[in-house]
Image 1 (cartoon, rainbow, N blue to C red):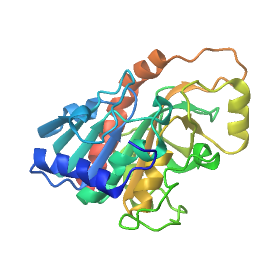
Image 2 (image 1 turned 60 degrees about the horizontal axis):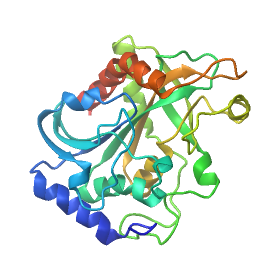
Image 3 (image 1 turned 90 degrees about the vertical axis):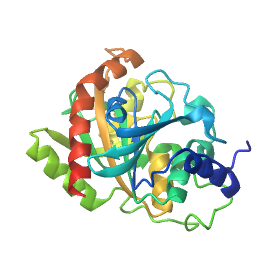
Image 4 (image 1 turned 180 degrees about the vertical axis):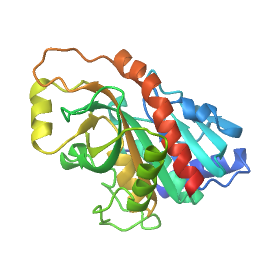
Length: 278
């Protein structure tokens, strides 16, 4: 597949899903590292491994199951990506965001995106959940924007606005649900870097200085493509570890997966509550 995915390739993947399911999903969910459990509670689920869909990139990362789970969740028809694709896996930006473009072609109205992120804000603790109010797309600023290349006019405009990347009404619902469920909800700016190396102390001090509250290796590209197509977006970060601003601690992927076990139930409650109140 070339660097830039074509509408024909997107539609081949879309039709691959349509052939496998009678569901017409309204909401898309992308589950991050260690946050797979929500997919297991989808009712009357139809499951499609990524490898069985034409042109669909396959997830290579531990903690990402790599399959679509389509079915009923809290009264909504949902398409759940159990495991996402990352830029650092060697795919192009256009390839890693193909699933979001397929969501658009399937007619989804909104996308809920979750991730495991490092806490940059010194007030954040491992196990916290952060509502993403905006993102710092450092990967895109450095020249890797998922909308580079020929614009697909059928999906959205050449120069889409990103002033409200995260939907304010969905954010308000998430705050209300968290309050009702007694889940402390942090809020802040998610910074997207390419990875796969974790950030060093100088990186983290820089990120804190420019206004990042949490940092990870995903999400911003998917959100840009969703907004390009007019989908409403809700984003939640599970804070998997505290920022290592002085180089005194070591961060591991195992730690991120382990933290997911504490974070998953909280994120699941918030997402379920928002779905119920739609």
